Amino acid sequence: MQIPAMNGLKFLLAIILLFGCSSSPESTQSDVSPKPDPSNPIYFHLQGDSLIWVLDPVRQVFDSLEQFNRNWIDVAISGNGRYLIGLTSDSLFQFDLLNQRIRNTYALKNTPLGNLSCSQDASLLAFEGVAQGQRAVVLFYLQDGLSLVFRKNSSNPLLSPSARWLAFNSAQKLIVSTVTDARAMILSNAQLIP
Image (cartoon, rainbow, N blue to C red; front, side, top):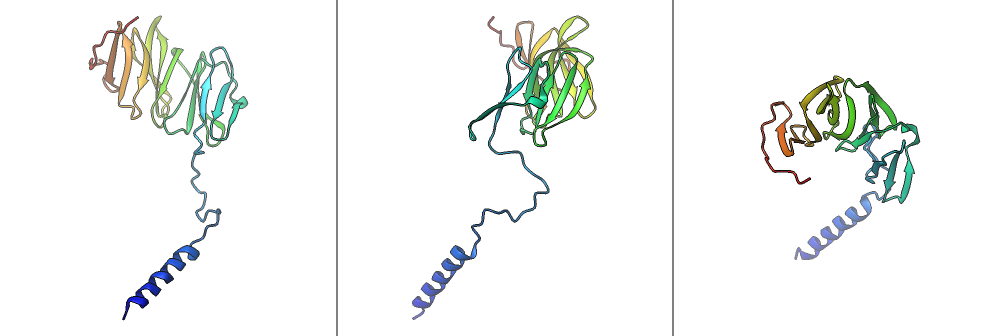
């Protein structure tokens, strides 16, 4: 009969699987492309405070990022968790959270007021600013360092993670538009409640 031989083969395979696989915590992969810390810390800024704070609920740590001490108007985190973007009264800062350093600093043409929003990879930003004395939604392209007044008399911009759509307030209405169309076709004509 071949049944005992089959059971013996299964037993041998089970032994190889159990003891043949390493349970060592050391990684065999190279760290050529390190990944952001998976603990998902929460970054935030308190109005009137010059520090950016970090709360890591997994590690139970609450601390400030002292190296990023500025007079912040607003801050935002990219969807991929790699970049922190900060607005001051005349500049925009891009921080690399993985390497804990300032990656880029840009002077702004339009005075920022806040309500900063960024795309998944932080390649496109939207914020509320002042253009020719009027409140406006301003787009900022990080790769080129270029800003564009998207729409005057508008506020509270919010970019989609893909950077294809932009929602904002204008004339007491919520407007959703494609980023490439500054004419802002109204996709949602809902009245805002004051």
